[in-house]
Length: 193
Image 1 (tube, rainbow, N blue to C red):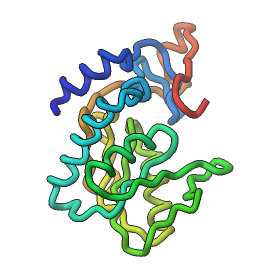
Image 2 (cartoon, rainbow, N blue to C red):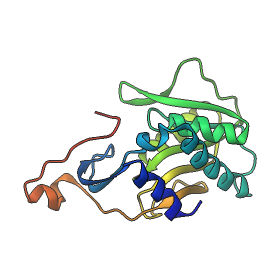
Image 3 (cartoon, rainbow, N blue to C red):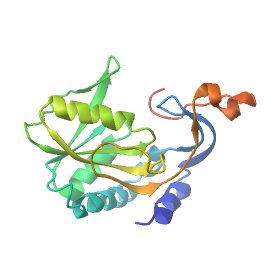
Image 4 (cartoon, rainbow, N blue to C red):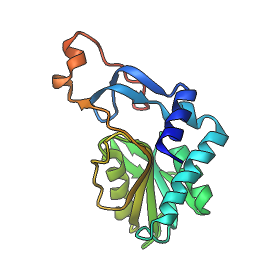
């Protein structure tokens, strides 16, 4: 899929929002991608995630993938659909007392090759947390992927990384936010409310 095709799907589903937003990273932005509005449609979710799986499979540096894992909540559907396209298991991590953990009886076997996915990457913080969980359980992160990369390609996770669309959307620390200076209040439409 091209970036244009991906963004068209977001726009068709009113999932590319404009305003003043507080991101889960704590940064502020004038644009927000509400992936849940796109992923609520199973055929669209399947199409997007199959395209992400195809990118991962085509990257010889990623190699074999034994399982796909994502942070809850935004990455759960992405992990499930990418795993389905790859024919492997899908796991998710959750924050427990603000620490990313593997729960619900999920297990990663030593040496299992994991592909970490998300809906949107801004700073890569959640992906890094999941990579730490993978390592703590003896797994190996072989690559990472997201539907959208808001960092403009700037996030380096130390593994091959793929996104269906890469955007350069300015983000601001709250104290440096021009929208805050103009008197606007950031809203938090994401999952960590």
